[in-house]
Image 1 (cartoon, rainbow, N blue to C red):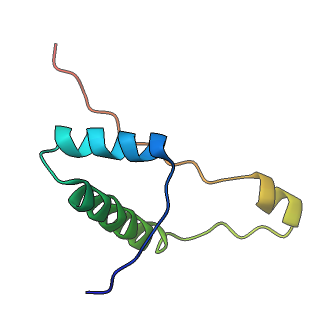
Image 2 (cartoon, rainbow, N blue to C red; image 1 turned 180 degrees about the vertical axis):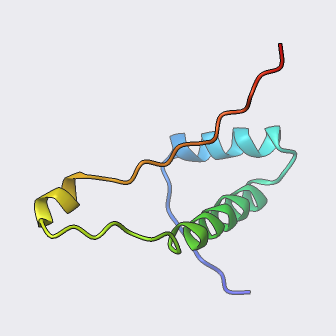
Amino acid sequence: MPIITIDVDQDIFNIIKKRATKNLLTTKEQVEDIIRRSCVNYKTSSTCSKIKVDDTLVNIFSREKHSKSKKKRKR
């Protein structure tokens, strides 16, 4: 497995460390989990179809709406 070295601020490192202890992981495992989830989300989002617009300014300043389906509440 290749080794990657990254530099992060102390504040960010403290946040990752706190999140790792909350998830019962080491800091290294937490960083690996964050990167893995990011790659999985990127892989699924890149397959979405993009809206093709002729006007480049509209294309730059607009985005697709992604809404979650609302769950029906039982009364």
